[in-house]
Length: 200
Length: 244
Length: 96
Image (cartoon, rainbow over all chains, first blue to last red; front, side, top):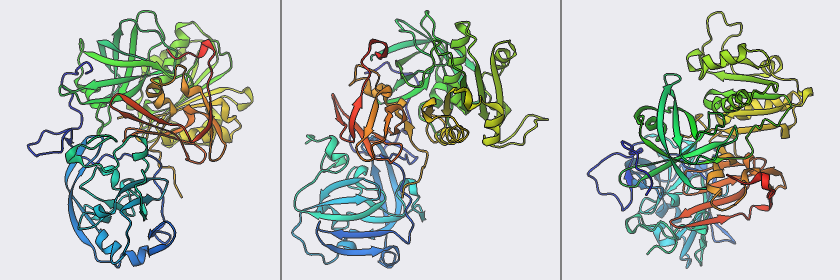
């Protein structure tokens, strides 16, 4: 451990809440990116579900905003160790998005505008566990936080909640995404502290 | 590159938000003007944060390292360094780092320095380095700040520019100017560049430092008036002008 | 499609991390972007750090040049985004 700096605590706040192991509570909302914030005109925005060969579903912004939405309150856990509790979102459930799609695919790759990707089991997108979120704290989701729309999947580390989401590709094999291909865990359960590949 | 421990020997407030921290570092390997250090803070529970700060001091043989830190309101490290850290306490640093954004006294060409806000720090390191070596290389500094109270090293810059054979100094105020200032508040633009910087025909080496948007804008203006891109060296401090 | 949000640093900020890997100062090393061929020294790359990892992007086309992740006692480094890195190994360029 390095030389301890008297009186230094960082951005963390002390709290009695139970957090996943190794996490600290924060009250702000850090912006962490792997690249420039994409600027997407709403009239050009699209969200697709495909299987790598065929597009199975496609929405533009207008048709996407006609889908039923939900209000979500979620705790966010970032692998860089900050956690933000009780955040408020509005979004479309992935149960709605994936709807009646029948597929024997077991995995998915979530794709974003820009070059970001993240992978996860398809089952984790279903059953009220994931949303395409477009409003945060009663306002349109800001670009630096992933607007126009991002994936929100709070039971996994926040790098799985891909910003600037553009689609989901159904996969028969798990294909590591941007961070998973460079040492991060393929699944990423904060409560089992699955930060890095090889973590149980 | 290993982590070394420096002891704080002096603190000096340059402005209401910027503080110079003087450290004594055993076995400091000296440095070249323009380089920076990584500073690491560790909380009692092991949580740590690392940020980069430019070296403000001229190279010296006594192991004396000066950093000037601007306090960012929502920063994690800078509020600690500017408000909490006390004389006698210790700080971990790694460095000196960087071989590109540097000035060495063997360079004889005209030097154009352009600073935005706290971007003045590494450029001051270059100015002090030149002074310590008794150099007379042609230096110009264009320093952009929000308002007069935000100027860091004001007295020292004034004293330096009053000397013969020295650094020609020009200020730009973007939000509020001193009384009687001939130019209304505003950002650096082509006319400022034309009036205050070395002609591109002299093929100066330019060093631009500050918030990322400032650096991009100033570098583009330098190119627009004829400077070659490979004669322009930049150091970007991120969106808010500091590495928080 | 991307606009400059000015939320990046530059390669100078990565020099400390990269000194763990390279014996010579990498910020003066020239890298050729595998996407657009632009060749600039790494100090001029657009750097995104303080997230899960460090990402250096081509200042001309934003293609990922280099990615770095620290995982406990290991570092993962991906430099596939560059066709080459040209390092100056002459004695005068040794990192301190």
